[in-house]
Length: 534
Image (cartoon, helix red, strand yellow):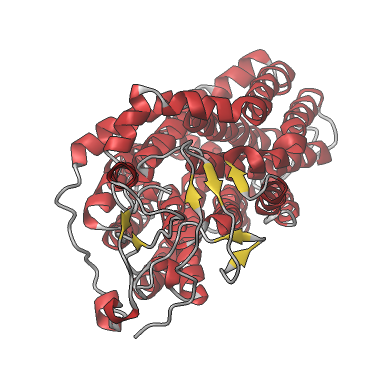
């Protein structure tokens, strides 16, 4: 029988307003940061909340590595745009399509694969998506034409598209609310470090190898990760039966309300605890099929989350940071740095990734900051946690990111010292880390929803925005000037998006209250299923 590692008698519960959680603990209950455990774990050793810390973190590691590989393969070949334009005899903007169109396919991967993991299980879909990704990158390594390479790129991007939804889903499945900010932070670091892909592809060119080697290396890591995931990523979909110890006996109305939030209550005695699944059962590459999960309705309902303010903010945040900042850096730095007055070797055209590494590395210092801030504010608020309590960490990044854009744009416009590019990239990426992590955690915490449906539109939306912004980004900049577009328009758009943190800090709860009373919230509560809400 597996060990029960966490107290199953927590009194933590969500209040009437989604995103407001009562974390007051009674004497003798397990606490973290002075807060009771939420979600409340069952005493079943098969409950993912009760799994050993090592297993949980290995699952997180596998997801984070998948996110890193998927994103590095997506954007890493951007240093080859000039080379591909010569090899395939096309103009640079057409060659950039080998980055842009896979970026769109990356988002559409979630549209198909997320409903599949909801119906067929997290484990089999992660393993299948890793296989698709591996097939795509090894195919890309063998391509001889633009059209064939485009097909291979779209395939591996589509297959790895779920790598941005699965980590969020699995963090929600296996970690408590007091841990999620930090755990999502590790995933975000891996996602962001995917932007260093151009550095590695540039080094390969510097070593005298062809562009094909980049995809060989990605394939090798994909196969290693497939093996690691097979042994460590157990199925995390779990219908939890919770103990809720109310101060007064619940009446029928109370039970109906709780059932609408997809929480089943029953006495959980030690005699009814099942044994831990044997290893061979944990390693099965398939999971049980949820026959009640509606594949096409899951896709259709996901678009309704565009009307949820916090979800829409995540979409615009990711889309703008990736589509404007990320692609501008990846496209412009390689073009500028190889031309006079810098005249660097093309093999060093991806070295701006070093600035990304430094920016993200400095952000790691503050990895648990949003959880700690929320915990302190919760204690000050008599144990009542509001979803907005973690947002204060974004106030400094709100200003730093546009400064980074302005620095990069002016450096490019006036051919300033190359360190200007590095500072611009580093500042923007440092701030972007916080916005990626905290806006995502806030959206998940602040709304009662099927998380998988929310993740579909988040990933599809941000990739669609980044695709729409990036498809002509190179032409916009070259035709209108670096200062006007990057330091002017891009910085302004980024700042407007960032400043919404103030809106949510001041009026976030009022927005949640108003949203919870709409037909949309009623639809999402009515269709919520076990294991999908917070």
